Length: 570
Image (tube, rainbow, N blue to C red; front, top):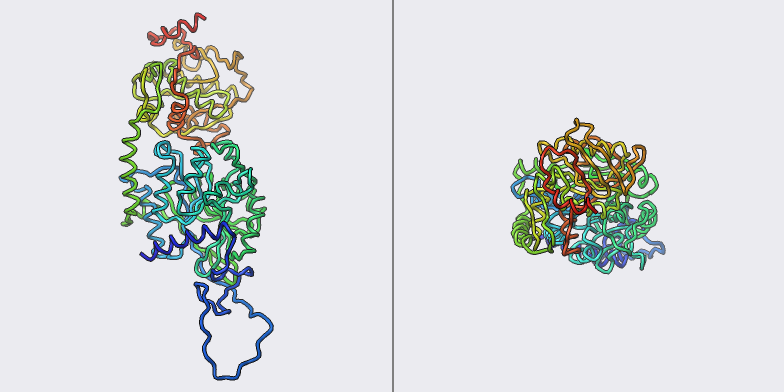
């Protein structure tokens, strides 16, 4: 399998080259950007024999021969941004088909560089069990050449990220995520690099990565991972790559594309292409900013990009771009990568086994009954909302009762990951909004507007208390709301931790759709994964009903009245 040998060999060599900065011996890697072919070197760096001559020898020149300017085509296949997910093998958009599309393009362009942009290891149910190893295994089999740092790659903590970098058969690249103790790229001991050089069609390509400065606030990066300004980091790294012979420079970007186009690219010279995004947008064609292409094709498995950079005389002079839709390729007969498909089946089978194992214990019965979580305060609703608020340091948290499933009680006793996944099955992600007190009151009014029909919009809360009267007309049911003993100020601003379904207007919460996103969906952890981690860390847990929700004139018999009585009497 010549392609496989080529890829593995290149990755092994580049780990050494990137860590030492050594580029001697690669064709086309002279510091002036020229080719060594004029000096009689072969592509492997060995000296080719000079033909014998019968003519009289000419005097040796005292000047070096002028190196030829390099020309060629750099082909990039990007990107990953897999969010720790595999997708279903029954659906067209899954990781086996995605890698199969990479394979198909590499067959057409054998020198293509396959790159990711981070957010691959997490956050998903698989990630919460396997800590991202399932993704590293798939990308190793799929022969990824380079990956960038994403914020979700730190969801399981810095030590887990280091472990997965070490397990990767490809280098992870970042110009601006450093270890504050050493000043080196974070996880350098495990093989991460600030940049790397490789040769594509005779052209030396420099690659590096940038990570959003939001990362320390939205991921578990630990105390030693430092994220510096992306533009400043590139101003340092790009000239270094150019000095070491890079004819073309590509940045694996995990910075939101609007920021790249307004703050990074205008302030950095010498970058030919930024590929990837933090905002998960998808462009039909790259934009051009300060002479740099910005190529954005979303996240997960919907699209894969094919980008060609045409290099003449050591400079990128033009480009070609194709956005491939995975589902359309499958419809045309695309074959999945068989090894990756087998990994999916193996990990899914292992997941079924793993989720049945105990993750902790509860000393109180966790109440997920519908006629509680959709009308009244629930101790499980309290636990989920508390963990949402604590994880984000928000003022309050709001969890829709309809997002808490199974209509059952759990414990006292052992809890398994399957229990949590059954209770929180939707894969919703944590997000934080900034709202006025007026909007918060409107959200609560919406939450209690359909309690008679057990609507899923009922709010389980943390950081606040409210009283409502279901006998009042809809729109006037909230009687009182307080935060820390103080009434809500309609003019004040509050941060609200919730899930992406509610933040997007689900369950009638349209008043939240235009709210400022402090933590945007896609940046926060999957809620089920967060709760699994917290149960493991806090076991045994013992959530209680504490009087956060008071029901006046209920049109039904409150099921938590007995539990509330001692609290209200205190």
